[in-house]
Image 1 (cartoon, protein in one colour):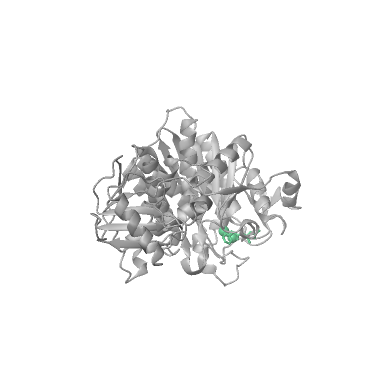
Image 2 (image 1 turned 120 degrees about the vertical axis):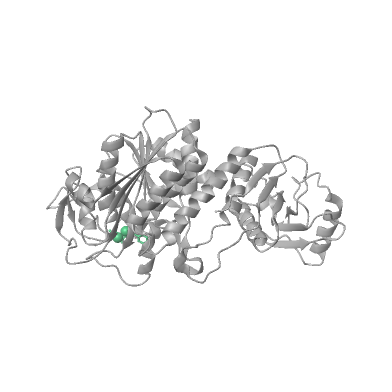
Length: 495
Ligand code: BES
Ligand code: MN
Ligand code: ZN
């Protein structure tokens, strides 16, 4: 992905394009001062407002090319609506429209005045620069796997964005690295499962390791059977595609400091297994490795940012297939932890692969905290829809920090409860536990299942079934929750 250059200059510098926020009264945003053509622009914008050519409606844009009496090749007007009523979501939508409007223009050197915080200003300029950089860098992403065929990939022209303010490199770099990480996450989740296999995910990790210099360790089927990962291997036995456990280790911090562990569900295709899913929209189950793709996207961003922290990533990757060799409802397996599981539904496979990954992560890395992320339950979409991921955990401070990071990056989480009452739903007459807990509270019982594999470690679980993907006309992966996790990890550095 081409990298935009971000710089800062307090005087309005020369550039070929100016991005200018305009309200629904036809006024330049009051925060914009000292433009070299301020008077001429003010008049022009008022005229456009009167003639009805530009009303400043929220997230509308108008690209003026060589406007008379203004020494500027291009001015992009971006509507802010009623500034008093501008929300965070509204502000982010103006950034997205601005990026889109420049996509098909000749703009290369851009000065942007679209950096201010919506009222009431809980946010600041740093926040705006983060989002501006993230959105513009991210606008370069275009699904480009060769299997797309004749599609001609996007050729972005914007090379340089100058912010008319004092130097703030950290948020610009974070925004950029986040966008680059998200692009990797999206590309992997968009790829069909005949290309994005567990082996391909492993190769992606190996590539990242080479590029950024972190350790990669891959376990294969034989080793994992040998080690006793009976639960993960039970899911993998239905498929001929080799499963992998992919381990990444980023060591930017003190040698003896315990790492934060990120564990991501990597089901490269979920048919449901013998508990076969219905056919409608089953193609979308190629994104059932969205958790794994998030881990890889975060590692990409870490490689770009090189913060002084230790992070490990662990990805159990497999297909979930029906076959003559597949697990059947009622089968009992022994997990790496020694606990036995009665598999009442082979479509509740995510927890079966994650539980062994969680045990392995604790045994191998003794992490200070574990955050797992998974497209785990359809119930999560029913409960929360597509705008927030579910978060559950055993440590409120950890959950709160993640929620906070999600608010800042607008990659939000909503907490659901855990407790003995829900745990009881996992009771089995034939093993230590069943892998499903009935129709009620499916997201909570799934997390309750995972909780049984956490020993003495602070842990949070993110159910991203509703947020990692959008259906409909914009069908595809979203790159969530990379932004929130990168923010959380960088906050941990400051703490
Ligand atoms: N990968 C699915 C969850 C899912 C569904 C993600 C829709 C994204 C969109 C998961 O493996 C699954 O099938 N879960 C079952 C659990 C049930 C059998 C207890 C579900 O949600 O139906
Ligand atoms: Mn499933
Ligand atoms: Zn699944």
